[in-house]
Length: 204
Image (spheres, rainbow, N blue to C red):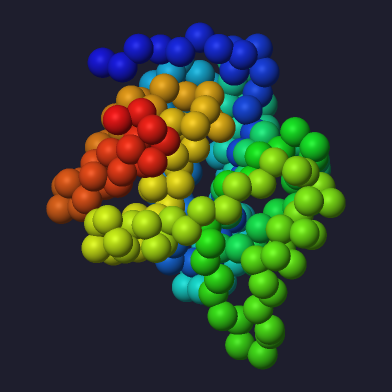
């Protein structure tokens, strides 16, 4: 059983928003984070918003955890962490960003018919109006190269955030939550994804 971390989360609510598009597994990430928070002895509240049934449509999910949480929705400028599985969606999430907000962004863009894609430079430039704490990583490319598939890029980013202490949860409880949430036939791949994130973070 993983040890319970007693950190500032016991006094302060941690606010996280995850954005992406339909089919990227955001609901699974939400379930994993919520389960991991509970395993760390914390109260957690979650909310799922926008386009959940539309593959390729915008998806936004919220989670708040701490000693006691009363509402699942992250307020304007109050996000501690915004995880973006698609770069353009990160701009929509800027409403929740303040100077303290850490962005962790997958270098991935989904084509929207009839709309021009913004460059990475343009997106980051706009986000810097809200926070300077922005990390862009080619999660799709890394997972494709190391694991043979990009489908686990969201899991990779979530684990990386834990190992880099962007999320105040014990990474071992993230792994426990993955084992509880992922279908058995996909479990080996997801465990390898956890280990890849650990290696990327230099904690191997």
